[in-house]
Image (cartoon, rainbow, N blue to C red; front, top):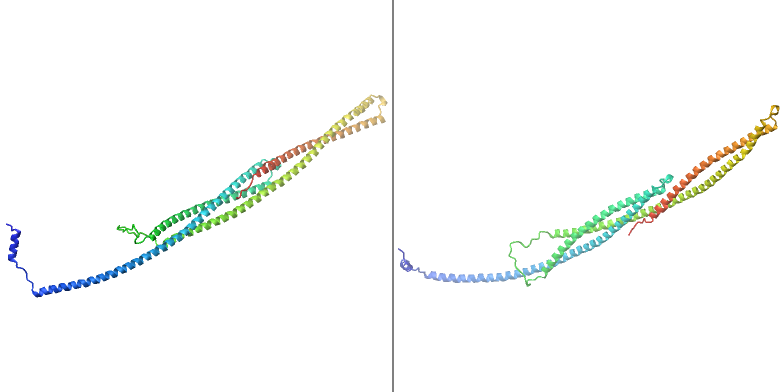
Length: 412
């Protein structure tokens, strides 16, 4: 069985009489209340004063910190702008050096092309001179000068090839340094825009916002020393490579001048050797032609002499026949009339004289014929040597020297 709420309060009122306080308790309660109110009033005053002091102090410190941050931002902007100008100056120098190095590379390439063309001309001259015939196929001063020119051309081309490769490698390094400088410059321009934007912000600027995210905003993990060291290293590396590039260009200039001097000097030496050799060959050819003319005239004289000797021998035949006939007729004498008289003696002596004369004529005829054979052989040899000299002159003067007129070394 349950009681209602009203019944429950009625029962409680009957069972529990109200609590009564004493007068002392009443006064003590009021006194304590007044004391607490005074204490709380004093505490509130102190809190208000401390709040005013703390607010003023915090406001002053906040303004001081803001001024310090503004100053640091200004200094940072100046520092970034300074290093930006340094990197920008390095970039301009790199671009200028890349252009200069490209020009020098083109000069080396053109010089190498002219040397290769000259090298082919020298090789053709050596090949053509191998077509000389006879005794003129000699290792003369021209041949030695051409071989030396070939060695100088080959060495110069090899040297310029190595220099060309070195300059191309330096060009690649400079482009790499320029790429690093561009990235560094791009990062600095981005950082400069950010800090300039921050420097322009104020506490009363619009679009300011509070960040309530969990990720920290101070994510920078590179020290200022590392940042300065990286920038200085980029600048120092660029300046070092610029110095290396200038040294390479200076070396290239000196080597090209020396190579050009050696090549032109040897070219003049080869041409001088050609002209000197041609002078000798033409002189020998003239001498051979003169000897050939003399030998030809002498051959004609000998042939005329042989004809004359034949005629002289033929002219002696009637006299020999006459003497033989007379002796034969006188041999028909009889008995004591067949005596060795003065006529017989004279006829016999005449026959002997005729025989001796014919023998001498025949001996001289044989000598003339032998001399003619030797002279004809000499004439043939002279003609062969004249033809050899003609071939040599054609090769050296018409072919080689004409071809060497195209030989030139381009040095821009």
